[in-house]
Each structure stands twice: as structure tokens, then as C-alpha cells.
Length: 188
Ligand code: SF4
View (tube, helix red, strand yellow):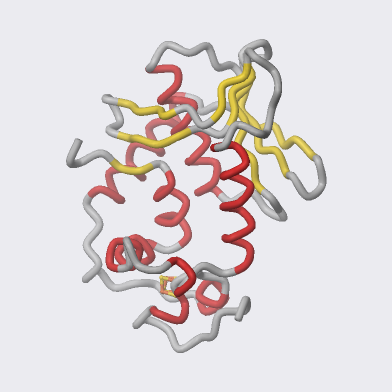
């Protein structure tokens, strides 16, 4: 499983490729070094899923490990409502749905389908507003674009010149540890 990619890295890579390099550098470090409040809150929302407290429906699947041999992806889903054939990713706040987040949901969807689960619908659930945001499942064209994105991630070289977006840096969890910026993290 050496070349398997964690589904959680897809959003980070879409946000800023260099963050993938920093993620590996600081893997295993004390998370309080870089985790800002929104990320901590989001992690707690996920821990609720992981400890099986988010649903009482017996047909629901929570924190199910998923993988795809075809795409060489591995990860975990939040919640699958079998009766509705609906895959849900919970976020504490979701002011905007960036493509990286959609890639993560597509990845979970494609993994589940390959594993034999019947998934017909996918959605984000925003905890803070109690709103469900339905997302289209990937078309063949979407899937080709997605595969090319995964390929870029798999072959990423941190020596590649990084396009710096100061606004992104301010909201990046690695901001204070990154050698590419002198911005301060807005969460400090
Ligand atoms: S601080 Fe900026 S350059 Fe560094 S990883 Fe984050 S977004 Fe990328």
C-alpha cells in the first residue's frame, strides 16, 4: 500500500500543494503546534462520528474505512445512510464548498462503489447551520479530471515553484511553520 494516498490529503493538495510537503514534515508532531481553532472544531466533529455518537439508526454506517485499488486511495467515510443510499461528510462550518472538499467526497463515493456499496447521492452536512448541501456525483469527465489530479499529487515535487497566495497562507494551518511565507495565521 506504499503508493496509496490518504483521501484527507486531497483537499490540502487542492488548497496548496506545498502543504502536502509540510504535512509530511510535521507528521507525528504535537498538533497544537499548527492546528488552528476551525481545524480543531472540525476534528471534534469527526471524532463524534468516530465514536459512533452521531446517529442512532441501525442501518447507518459510520467511520467506515474505505479504499480503492483502482485509484489507490484510502480513507474513512463519515456517514452512510443505507436506506437513502446517501453518503454524507459532516463539516462544522461550510461557508464555501471548494473543489478539494468535493474531491474528497468523490473519493469516498468512488471507493464505496468499488467496494460494492450502493451509493446514489452525496452531500455535505453543515453542523453549525443544520443544512444539507447535495453535490452531484462525478460524471465520466469529472472522473478523468479527478484521476489527473490524483496523479499530480502522487508525483508532486516540493522543489516545484509554489504559487503563493497570501490570503490562503493566512488561513493555512502551517502558516507559522512554512518557509514560503511571512504572513501570520489569522487564528492566532
Ligand atoms: S503557508 Fe501558504 S505556502 Fe505555506 S503551505 Fe500554507 S498556503 Fe502553502
